[in-house]
Image (cartoon, rainbow, N blue to C red; front, side, top):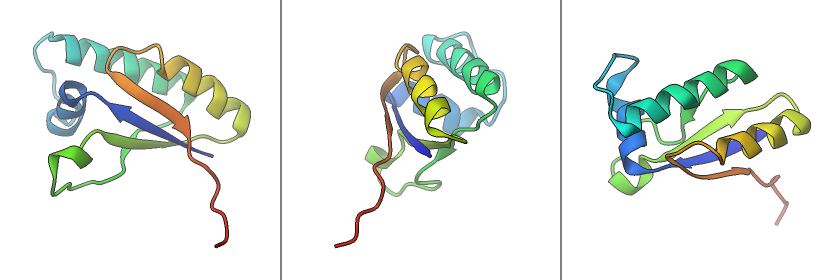
Length: 97
């Protein structure tokens, strides 16, 4: 199951540019800490959908691979409570044309 996540610009910038380095205690970086704790608790990782975006509108999109639907649903519910997460949803399954 693939969970799609959209972050606000500030949080996306912190995730993309800090590479785990400690930054100042801005609202975005403290939200990143909360997000990372949530991801650690579920045992999942957040990956950019567009690793090297050529347009800034692509930068806030990330994805998470969840092991099953139950975990994905619980993860989505919790992601929606994190400041800086503007959207979290289950990627629809591909349909044949």
